[in-house]
Amino acid sequence: MKNIIKTYRGLSKHVYILCMSTLINRLGDFVVPFLALFLTIKLNMSIVLSGVIVTCASLISIPSSLIGGKLSDSFGRKKVYLFGQGISALFLICCGFFTNEYLIIILIFLSTFFNGIVRPAFSALLIDYLPREKRQEGMSLNYLCINIGVSIGPIIAGFLFNKFLPLLFIGDGITSLISVVLVLINIEEKYDDELNNEIPNINEAKENGSILQILLRRPQLCMFFVLLLIYQFVYSQHRFTLPLTVNAVLNNNGAKIFGYMMSINALTVVFFTIFITSGLKKYHNLICMVLSGIAFAIGFGMLSFTRSIGGFFISTFIWTLGEIMNSISIGVFVADNSPVNYRARISAVQNIVYFVGSSLSTSLGGVLMNNLGLNLIWCGIFIISLVASVLMYFFKIYCVKYVNI
Image 1: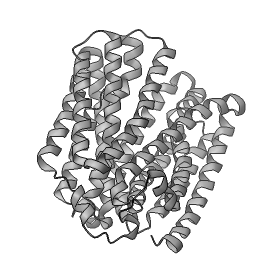
Image 2 (image 1 turned 90 degrees about the horizontal axis):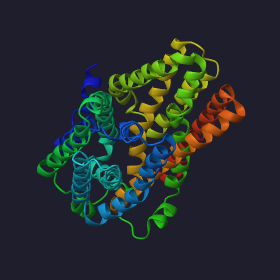
Image 3 (image 1 turned 120 degrees about the horizontal axis):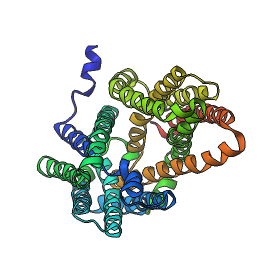
């Protein structure tokens, strides 16, 4: 138990501050979870039109993430973070003072664009302050803060949505500005030091060339991103295929039970992340990814025959364990294999892999449901997860033997 309690000890104060900024920012993450409801209920848009707008808002983050990665690696992570997060927050705050629906949508798009710039900048900034031996703990703490925030934030957002709609936007923007001030005052730009210091890990040494050239020189990153795409495809089934499955099995009780399942997911992350991080820190991060795939296979695979509420709850607990192992390991591997002067850009590529995997999960999920039925879909997900786990295991052997990681 003492070792578990010490899991997050020994990190620099800058890491704690960055994680605190994540927590505050996610506590105020009001707009995104309620965007579809805002468009349909408050602006009286059709479901089709609101779906198009939400999709476009997501697509905007692809080019902005790449721009944010390039700017962060060129001018410094802190500068880009402060700029992107600050501008994004101001656009959201403005939404609270306007009633014109077209203007609000434009402001949301602009806020989303600049928020996309923030993500690779923050990821690289966090890595800059994490020595290699502490990366899993640091990534785990930040992941935990994200989930604590998103567990509480939507509850506040639901109240504001119904009672004080303008505060939904203003509150989201203000919490983002608080995070900006926290970073501005307490975090120093470490990018120049990282460039000038000697890098003990050869895979993180400075490089020159385009991002495509860098990836081609590091086949381990390319192979990892392909496997990550498969993992993300499997994991994202919980956002589309899973709720439809619950509703089909439990009929009118489906929405209520799915809400309970998402609560189990959040509570499992909050209470089990520290234990999993402590228990697995002595293992290679790719072994954690293998175990994650196995948990996905069991948790999602059992949905092919589960017909009880208890079965759905157990399934959620199991695949959430896979989510935790997945989340605390991905960033570590990517950081360990990214040149110090390309960290943000490669983080942007990672974000794009997430987006593509999630998009394929949603689009193909609907097609497969119509043609195969629910049972066969989950059997297929079980097989895909197991195959991905086996491939990840052999990929781990390759990395240890040929890449020396």
